[in-house]
Image (cartoon, rainbow over all chains, first blue to last red; front, top):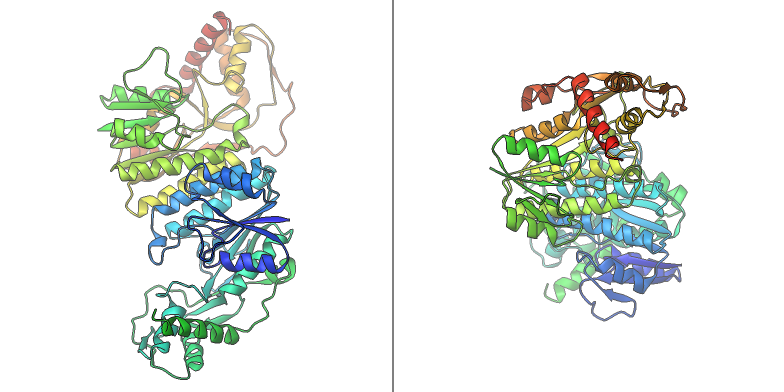
Length: 301
Length: 301
């Protein structure tokens, strides 16, 4: 089996590629920028250009596509018109995939497609869908069209919904990354009250889960997440423990209005249907993640 | 105000253009094929080509876009992969429209976006959405993304949901057209039991309704329809009356399983918010439509 991972040098894609390679699978990666160090299996292509999908598929001839590419610039991605470009690019990629006889297409969605449930548990096919940002609406629209396209015998289709992530190569201004960096630099790390409970997963495990979904025969939507809630303040405290101290200022930042108290994935499908369960605890993963950011801080980031 | 109508030489688009021109509005039309006779305001462009939207908007500089273009080949349109191409083309058109400062964007949807309600009445924003064909899923996906894009201040956005149409230039193998043609040729016209009640509107009125929505300030979804149900057999009988007889064979064709008994639009928004009410009765419109098809039959169609 040959797998093409779009966005395969990105935050999630790189770990998906690694996990597939560890399974002995032949993987191709496409992206705009040639990675450093260069990779044999890298195809330089900007999927926003119309002809790219055809070029990439003619070269990679994949059986399976994991479509992890999207516009993800920190902060900007929620409302940017680039979301429309990625809807269009995803349509083109799916069309060309079907033309090339790609057997299975795995898309990458987000927990922000869900209407936040009262009990905080997000269950595939059960929790209502009500995205409220252009990013999540665009992702959901892609899922809707490709699911129906698959029903017209285009290919087998699965959709991974990712939740809250942390880990190496995260944007340095996000929750775990910025807190770890500040602790490593011995700077004060201000936080909200941090009472909100979220489903946090290490991006390496999310990548491995996405890889497991890619090689499984499971169709439809699967939450790729930890299935466990952790309060944001507790996540920060675990990073502080890894740092052996530091100035965590819980409550120094105002809470955002209207934030749901709890967002946690139901992961029965991931465990039972896909057969994927991460082996490391969040404590271990946050410890590793702290060490990674500490290295970055030492290198002057 | 300048209005660009994509698909403006199509079944619905041509009447939208006519109605806008009757209001004294400057209209541009774009399409793949130069119309016969040629029009001054026609811009030849295939919106499926990436650069076309930019070219058309640079030329037409519209304040308002009515986006009526889509793949509509009889029968094929329900499941064709061309629906994905039109999702992509619609994303591009919307992006370029926002870049060019287009004030208002009106998309064309379908009653097939609705989950058929038990009472048969389709009410905007109330009847659940549950499209079950690639065509309707693709239309619905465009609506979802553009509605959210509009909420990000791209432009003002409205969405017309059209129901069942008949009239001049319809594909000759559809219900009203094929029945009228057979009656005109004095051939037997076989039908199902024809008990299903549908909201039928003359396409000239639908085009006028779309034009009224285009020049109104109303945002969101508006059913453009008659608001009245007619049994399919009764529609055929009205055509038969216009023909002054003919061999209508009601019940000669098997009924399709699972067809909802009644699909009728709630047209309060169209009447009250948009302020549009067609002036002709369905009897008059079917009479005119029969005469049109009779001419076609006389000319050897």
